[in-house]
Image 1 (tube, rainbow, N blue to C red):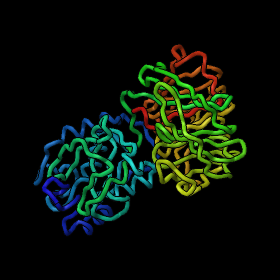
Image 2 (cartoon, rainbow, N blue to C red; image 1 turned 90 degrees about the horizontal axis):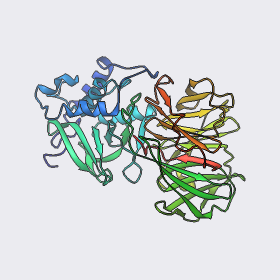
Image 3 (cartoon, rainbow, N blue to C red; image 1 turned 135 degrees about the horizontal axis):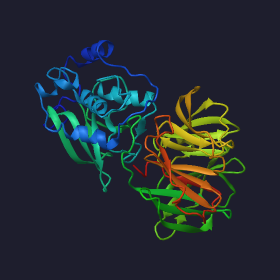
Length: 435
């Protein structure tokens, strides 16, 4: 390796005494935070600001404040968890093993797999080199920015024995750590708001005649930028829909078939390829995708979670059908963050759920009334929510969508996206298109 590799050829935990001492530290010295969401002032810009202030800090003594003997141990993970903690993030990873940070993210429902492309990194995420596991050989850093060309800029501890900014890293090809591992994904900071909202929300819909719609919305202002409508219809009667990314939809039919719809263009016109039939048994009333790896579906009040292993999933790439629980009598469904869903009830409640696994979830009431008329609820990320009722589309901002409270949820009833004209029978937003 060159001298620019993390740890100067050693990887984040390459020193010989790493494995044993990492275990000792984990058992005796690291703080372990409870899983319950807590109100927090943490924001993604705040995380980035903390990391930026550390650029240039180097061994042998400057990095000791990160809570590890950095003259003897690799300290990229210690740096990343210190940055999160200083920015007010809670909980933070409870390990100083780089790939273990990824496993912590998986265990907490915060890990976003990279798949075949760049994945969905956001500023403040922890980028993980190497598949999540409690083993050495990997590397981690803080995502500083996501660039227009698809590359990322990161701030990393223990890169050439100091805190280093690395610019224009290609997530699809970059390698790091002692074992020269590829980026496996990103750990999203729990309970961290966006601070400011920016980006274009991408919203797909289906009209009663089966034609698709695409609408771009300025997330900061709530103003609609443009809407295009397809000339062709889907060719089947749709029942539920989830947007995976800017050019991939999953749509179920009223006969229980699941189709993948690949978008060709959505700029000045809207075109799509013939829907790909992925199989039967999909009797779900609602679908939502969380932007990381999880597809959620509700059928007869039962919440299921599936893991997608490909950007353009085939039937074989939709795996791990997990029954989360029963009693999910929602009439709308969206995902607000990795591992989080939200929906409304006919009684008017706005509810948020933290999903951990089979039988392991928490329910939070954000609003007790007034949301019963919503026919669709959608979130493009960043705490932005859109509610569809009648022909209107309203926009809301939840400053921290993972804190389990609606105290920081604001609405703009006097300034809807549109007061009329939204006649779609299905609506779904691309996750992580707003931050």
